[in-house]
Length: 282
Image 1: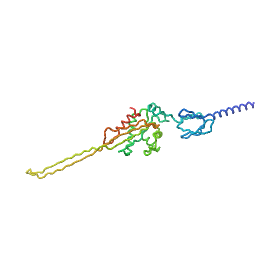
Image 2: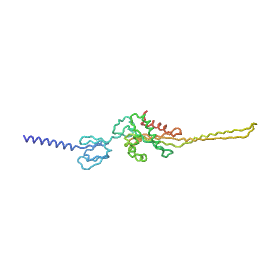
Image 3: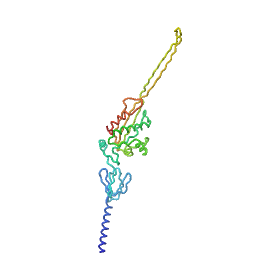
């Protein structure tokens, strides 16, 4: 009887060992963006790359995370690394139909502070911030299917990431989209140049004659006054660019105000461009 028990114990141990060996020998699978599958063992995973050894080999290979779509671990756990991006031409035609999820940028828009130029020289930043707010207010009313990041949040996130105005040139639009977590970035420039001056001049003269009782002229007095006023007029134009999170430019247009004005208002050209932008919905 003891022999039977011993045999059963040995069988159980053998089956357990075999199952454990089978589990340990199960390979990790890396699925690349191009559809290729790599089987082997994952050595380590960092923020930007995956170290990997093929089955039956000892050489260690490093694969960029940006080239990997998914990892199926030997335990059965599935880890999604990146989303495949469609070509820019295709995505432009599919602006509203895409379903967004918290993990991606789809249908999310950010508007950067506008650049303001006065006579082709950097002008007041306050005007650029005001134009950013005006563009947000207008587009928010016509953005069916999109989520627009509010300007305060946009500006705070850029500053925290070091993408300040003086350093912005060092960031690609993909970098900016990644910082803000959006699919589209709107960038604009307002240019205000001094135009002609309108001058007004007015004069007035007044004379009085003094006479005596015999109605003889005793004297003549006169005085006059003049005033002038000059009004400066401005030529204003706005340029607007829209970029996607793959650095593709999908809109790049400029518009000049039909008439010069005295207050340098940019609202007309800005509204004209936004209404013709691919993200605008009537």
